[in-house]
Length: 96
Image (cartoon, rainbow, N blue to C red):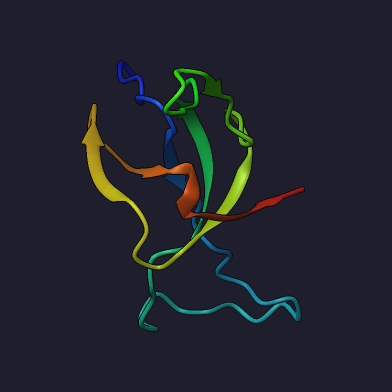
């Protein structure tokens, strides 16, 4: 991927949810699905620039699995794959 996010923006690849429940029940594709709100950070900017000109580094890094809001970010397509580009503020949490 040849894209570098600016400042406090990150690029996230959505992670598809399991189609099987914990009890082993397989959920068919015909069930109405929403887009997952979980993803993997594939690129990150340098950090937010303060009014004084200092750069505050991001808390998330490439490879982190993150949770984000339903309508967070903007969808982009790069090399035929879909990604989300969003600000670090749109991240609700990091899965550990």
